[in-house]
Image (tube, rainbow over all chains, first blue to last red; front, side, top):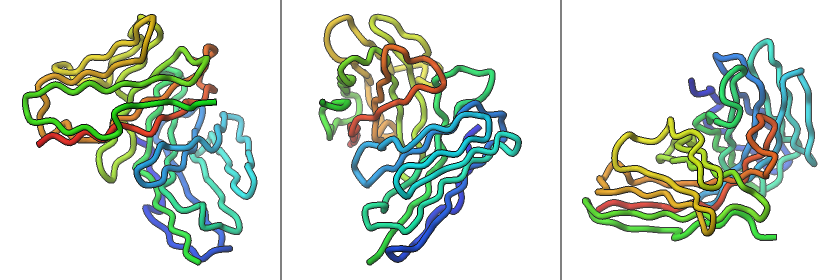
Length: 112
Length: 117
């Protein structure tokens, strides 16, 4: 089952914040976040494991609520370089431990 | 420190021809994954290979599609007798020797964009 991402698209001005959500109907072991610019490779951002951990990378951080099977990606003080499509990939608990199932993506546009 | 390499970046084929997509994993990585991406869609898992072994091909169409990862050389995704519905971006990812765990990071290549006329 494909995770559901919301919103589908968001437009920001430089310096504004955004939150991207990823929800699954399955129990999850881990959530993987990627950013992809048009015509390029998806770039790995971070992995979150069950246990409700949070992670941060510069001004991008994420949380994982395993009880709700949800993860959120937080982009703070957005920069122009943050523009792209953000994908969450999930690995279900009890299943194969390598098969990432990706959401449809959230298109983030940061304008000057 | 080269990343995952894929070639060609763009491939145009006529219906009925064969398409061969190549993927060289990152140095030190022995696990390769292939994904397909349709426009406005997320990536969909196709196959997982280790050197000389197909571990999981549950996402591969039963006919016309095959994959290999030989002892020497790149991984190959082969599509025989292509049809218009095969048009998509095909991405390869690799993970380290310790891969196969759910904490392992998959690093993606730039993809091959296949167009079937």
